[in-house]
Image (tube, one colour):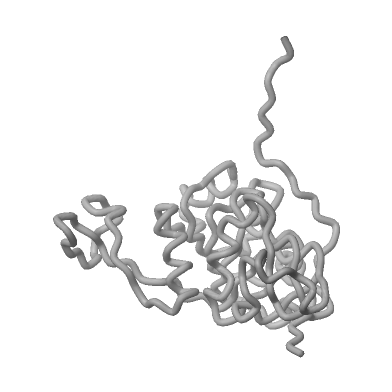
Length: 233
């Protein structure tokens, strides 16, 4: 029986060192690998290149790594609600490569599928296309985008089994699903870890073949990035 379970976050991230490239699932604060980010802060690794939709908020998510100056480069789709991210980018302390959100997702998915590059119309005619090959398909111009190359992908799932099969809950699926298997090593942290064969195959979102290590996380805060309510009548 295949068993990819490790004892905890320390063992799962033990070989992550300085100057590596890491994909991190999540969208804002939704579905982020909270335990793994906390462990990266604790380890004190630096010079990281992080591929993520954004960098959380100032005091949570990837914002914690930014506070400690552990990230040297962010590859993301927007600055979001993180004032420190914005400050470091504008001051030149942090290298930032902004990528359109759909292209960001597809660059992850292409890496997951073993596709080295693809053509997309997104960004043609803008500064995004500078230095990139352009070709016409069906009367429309496209630019060539290369799949990401990452050392580690860290994703967060609702449930998983010891064989690495993953199930996401609601919108927390976001970038997690396309980042699993898109790096040399994929680490999955889950809220509930069950024996292999327990999960219904019809409801598995990511098969275990894409995951090398899996562990059960603990004490999830699951913060809400923006809470919007309406006034009572």
